[in-house]
Image (cartoon, rainbow, N blue to C red; front, side, top):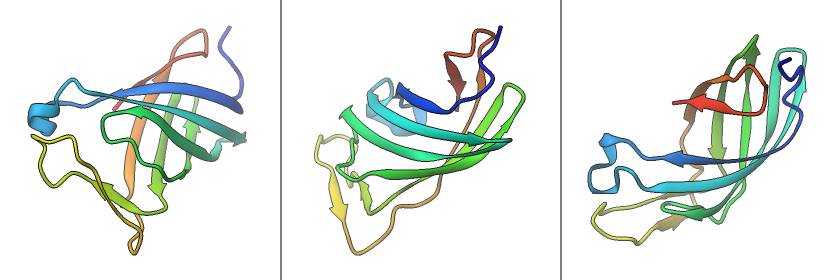
Length: 116
């Protein structure tokens, strides 16, 4: 039987796609704490390792529709890479990070979300 709420602590991994050129296949690990109220989803996310990890906490805001999940993630500051061929990440605390859109599907057991 699927999980009825996403409220709780989650850990996960993002695998960078072809748009990231030489970083395709690199992984970013994170943990999230989510609160689901009805179909609203709110929470926080913290990168814990891998390529592109930010030292800042991110906020999450989104929706749940049956097994479909979508949310927007915002980091407290802008971070990224000016050269995908290098490992260096810059942080600009004078700017908030951009909206990062995620969507996925919860599996039948209710313990794994896969998506974009």
